Amino acid sequence: MPRVSEAHLAARRQQILDAARACFARNGFHATSMQDVISEAGLSVGAFYRYFKSKEELVTAIAEQVIGGVSNLLDEVRAMDPPPPIEDVMRRLLRTVDPQFGPDGVFPMALQVWAESLRNPQLAEFVREVYGRIRGHFDDIARDQQAAGRLPADADPEAVGAVLFSMVPGYALQRVLLGRPDPDTFLAGIKALLHTPDQS
Image (cartoon, rainbow, N blue to C red):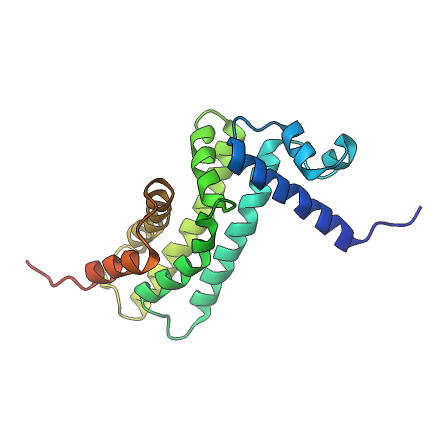
């Protein structure tokens, strides 16, 4: 029997993930069954379960694709010398995540996963791990900004990282629920806050 190529395995795996995204977008995470995804992918049950055993595994794989892109971007930003200003970091980040607000994007699904994680320990652990990883990037970016003289020497990088990180899900929540703001408006708000004169 000929050995299946890695390219074929990767393509079949992506076929399943695309089917899962379509099902989650159409029916929601909780209402989508594994059989729904199997039918959408057009595969046999046996072929499907070679790749994924649960909806949680599907969500994890979908999220990892997007998180991987965000992590790579933040790594690239940290490699720049000197580091770009915070507003430039956020501009690059929003341009990376903005395509994920469409009907096939991950952010509409992310809200469902956040809710489901409140009662699903496996998803809860995944959410903590993923967001903790991204939060760590922002802590490092805050340290880089401090080293470049753009933050006070006595600032707590983890406190700044917490605020920077919160901007991303905050932006995502508004875009999914309200359809706004657009990236330029959000970035204008960030820029205004960063350059507010000291009133003390």
